[in-house]
Image (cartoon, rainbow over all chains, first blue to last red; front, side, top):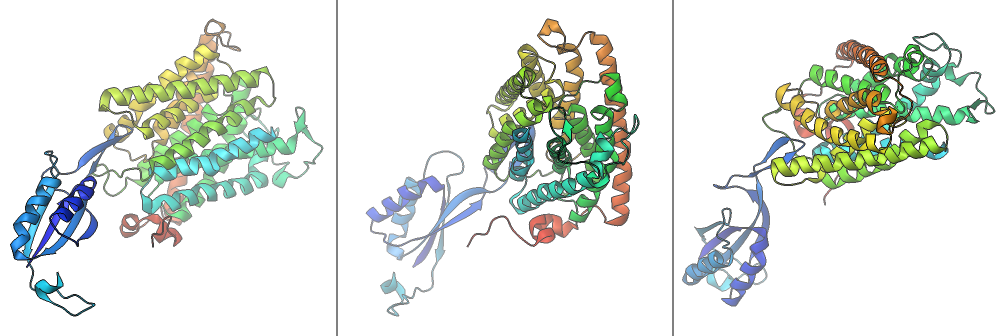
Length: 112
Length: 392
């Protein structure tokens, strides 16, 4: 099992969610986060003074998936979240030791 | 006059409070609202007790006498012109409220609340009341024929210069100029500024002390100047930065209003167009000069917008007040310019020296600044134990 963490532009969330639904992904957790990568932040100018905004608003999507669908999930996210402009985000794939469904007590792939 | 009085109080509460409140960080907005409200209360009490008699009783060329301490001897039947003196007292009180309120913009996000109260009290007694007497209360500048209908000298020059001195002595916010803090709510800034615009009609037109043709022209030129200055500021930002900003256009409006204030009783519509344009142009660049060249953290640009605007209007009235530009009341440009410059020199000098002394007194008694930790946390919590926004 893997935990896929995708950091994307907020306005792309709906497209990513729909694309993942189409390949059978039924659950995800979403967080509003702030951050920056190579694009850094941006500057805003008020009354002639420049203000640097380091942290830009992003959305982080966490999805726990079976090993056999990881590549499909990553591909779907990268296609759906892509604008081609700087700041599109990143996808991280982490190993996931176990998953437990609280209601039934199931664990592993059964709980996904 | 009742309406004008209400309008001028509306400028501070809630106008100026929201205008300034939106420009600071979210963890300091409550403190700014608190400053404006507290100053309104302090100035009101002080006005009744001692300031009114210092400013508007006969006295001598420099100061009124103290016959009306606590408004002693004034009864409800007394008249100023053809309206009750009590209304005049209230009207002028609102000027004494907004003037130290303007200075708030210089020290937001870092000054001790106790120091703010002490500074306000001393400043009103030492600077505001005497200067008001000089210009409006029958003092030496009044006798010289200085033109300052609604406070380019009394309000904007005094507050602007004192703000600059106080900001320099108080020192910049800890991360200035490396990191500047973005206005947390430009929408609030716009709402507050719009209230200032509305209130300014009471400020300027009300200063004619009558609902007549002079008040009508004053209102008209006030409005024109604000609109032209707004558009000028917006155009400069659009050209320089590529985008016209909301905070910019409303700041241009305040600059236009401050600049027309001393001239609003003597210029015509053409003069107002010129004053509005120059206000937007000069005050815009003054902001950059104070922060980037002088490196003074006059945080919300009190000097650049109010000080520079008020001083510029005080000078321009001598030129644009002549008949050739559609103005009234100025016979000789040269003669009037001399009077205006003497008034500005005296008031600027007095405000600066007095502010230095007052700041030293505050430093020695209450202390001036909050701790570094308090500054980083924000004054809402550390000084007032409240927050403006509670998200649950």
